[in-house]
Length: 265
Image (cartoon, rainbow, N blue to C red; front, top):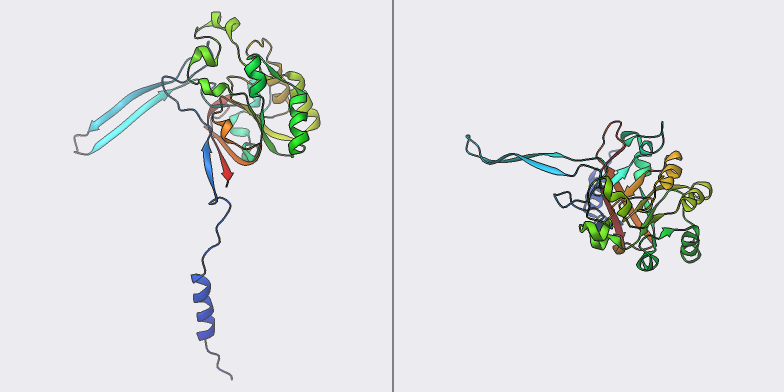
């Protein structure tokens, strides 16, 4: 019987283990936080309750160690948050039912800030999407579609961001900000396969909307929405990878959202 030496095999294993691991795409780039902080300054819909952080305990315990704890209260729809389809479409997905595949993916970012500069009640049209596609190609299936209006630079100034600092029902006629036109929402549903849609505004619909038809169209097709998104000006038109993870509220119509994008260098 032949005897085989294990030395060549052990040497090969040793050399393999010493070979440097090749750098991945995730290491070659940076993460951009697209989320506004939650605090007493966080903006909410004028008829909604706001964010509150109450102290449970801060200081040294009787046992001699430092301890800090709080409890918070917030409406679903305020700050950077997710709108679940059930928010405007009966029987559609609530927060916990939305698959992670709908909340992650490569982003397409459409800049309409120049038009919003001229008209802060601007409604994003089909032609805005088509013009973007002429330069960057047709929206890919599964894209997370984000619109940069430039409004986020006013956060958290309610008068500049919402159009009014008034609270309550009397504020609703004073709301003034851009959004997605219902015709553009319908065009997307009928012609493209997007995972989710978000804006750096308080609502998917523009501020003067009374029927929230854009919400209705998108949510009937189970397309979730992201509202009050931050820092979209730091993303390229294509290529950024978005991770948008909401608080997993069972039967929720919305939830606070931590959203970030990875941009390769």
